[in-house]
Length: 309
Length: 283
Ligand SMILES: Nc1ncnc2c1ncn2[C@@H]1O[C@H](COP(=O)(O)OP(=O)(O)OP(=O)(O)O)[C@@H](O)[C@H]1O
Ligand SMILES: [Mg+2]
Image (cartoon, rainbow over all chains, first blue to last red):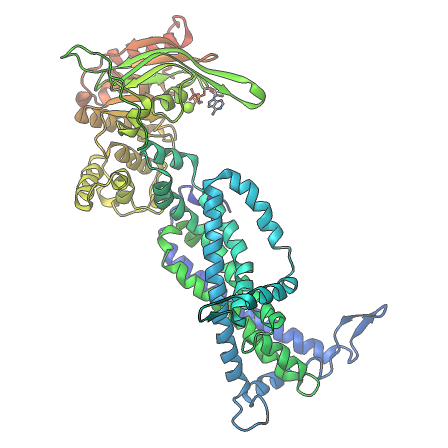
């Protein structure tokens, strides 16, 4: 969908109710997806061969024994049992929520930093076309660096930082890596948004003798909102993924990424346990997208076309 | 803001009003890819008196929009001189001497009708209450009282165009520049808008340069019709139309002999030779 299409004289008297109905049906479709997934899981487990399917020595379908594919019921019951046998151990789901909130906090810091940096880069590229040509290739290149390679470097550099009473913490490395993933979609989306005003609008601002800054505030920023919101959502999802992966590769304890690894290591004896933090990570992604959507609601006025489509 | 160009004041005798627009042998050459050049305008001479309504008419590509953009300082002339109220076009733009409306309304989709009209006032630091009062006047003037807080996507094309016209009038400019503002409207809406425009302009006393493709439109609205021709864009004739004061122009005028005479004169100027009258073909 292009912006001009969406703007084209469309009457959206019932945009509000329409959007509400769409949101409702989105939830329904989501639930349906979960049910289909559950049916596939249990269905394959019921009819699939216990040893899995191999094709020229490569396993193309997983084994269906209880160790590789525990029953959904087992996962659920395991989730309400204590984490381990030691006294006072909390139920798994409580531990998962704790870890998820921890990761959410770190990811939020990463997302915020990444978004600000991404937006500033976009602003620079919009202001100076030279910068766009010079910076954009580097941005794209930056995203091809594998996270796993990045983590030890950032941890090592961070370890050297010691200013007064401030010292670098592990979680900061995680946040930096999360921001590294989050800034990219924001930079690209914001640039597209800032460049989205039609020539006629830009020329109109020129006839009003409005300089770059006022054109930015009155025209480019509001026009960028429909591009910025999806970019921020994408950035949030990237920040979560970045956090989960970075927790593992930096060795940061307390987050959901680390928990997935820890629980999976006890997999042979307790296979159902590992699925609770995995589900937690998925919910975390949804929650973060939801939070960004809430932020988007406050900017609804500038988002008439997205709200209407 | 940073511009220091002094207004070049034409030494005019006291009592003689300064021309709203004075174009002296202006030309515009566009350089397109690989150094190829397009001569869009050549040797344009035109003077528009204060309060005068002048239409530009001519085949597509004859440089009507270009001439308007030169006056608006959205492009700069490659030769000649363009003065607006005695100042350079650039200085006139910096001083906000004109209001402008384009073929597409160009409203900001996130602003209500009222907020769109207030935009230029807002940019120039007019206070909130004063802005609202001015917007109220203009909304009434263009007959959109019930649509004040609607958004552009909730308006018809004609209504959007009226908002754009109200916006161009917001700062009470003494000069209005309009590039086919009714180009996308149906004939009925168009005739109604013409009548409103002619009334608004004579009430506000603004000079207007109005680009159009329609001969009847040009004749109905104007005091003078400037006929242009392409390759290279130039003025071939200027037809005087005298249909009386704008406030008194009504629909019945469209069936008046003076109106038909004007249409014929412009047609002949456009075709470069007298056209033998055949039936009532006006376009
Ligand atoms: N930015 C530009 N770069 C190169 N050539 C241009 C540019 N703008 C206009 N021209 C050329 O200048 C000439 C006049 O264009 P202009 O838009 O002023 O015509 P017009 O009379 O407004 O036509 P229309 O009635 O179709 O709007 C055309 O030949 C066009 O190709
Ligand atoms: Mg044109």
